Length: 102
Image 1 (cartoon, rainbow, N blue to C red):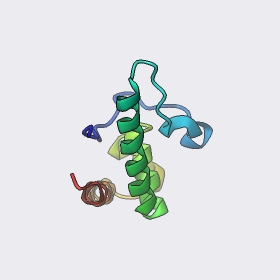
Image 2: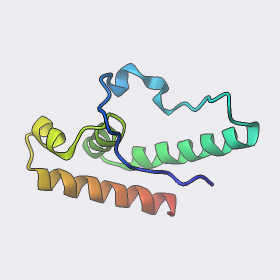
Image 3: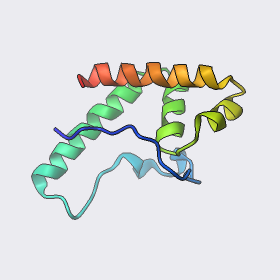
Image 4: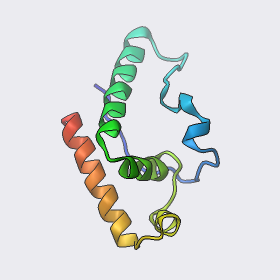
C-alpha cells in the first residue's frame, strides 16, 4: 500500500477545489493496472477519512495541503490565530492517520 504524504506544496494553487472536481481522480497513463488499483483504493480511503472530518476542518486541510496555503495565510483567511490553525490541522491529520491505520 502506498504511503500518503501530507507535505505542503511549495507554491499555492490558484484554482479552487470546487473548480477541479477531478482533483481526487487518479488517471496516470504511466501506472499499470495493479498500481492504478492500489492508488485508487488509497485515494478512496483518504476521501472517506476527509469525509469524516467536520466540514470546516476538511476545508482547512484541503486549503493547506492541496492549495498550499501557509499557516499564516490560513489564519488570515479564517481570521483566526496561527496557533489555532496549527492545532486544528494537527488534530485533523491525527484523525486521518488513525482512520487510515498509519
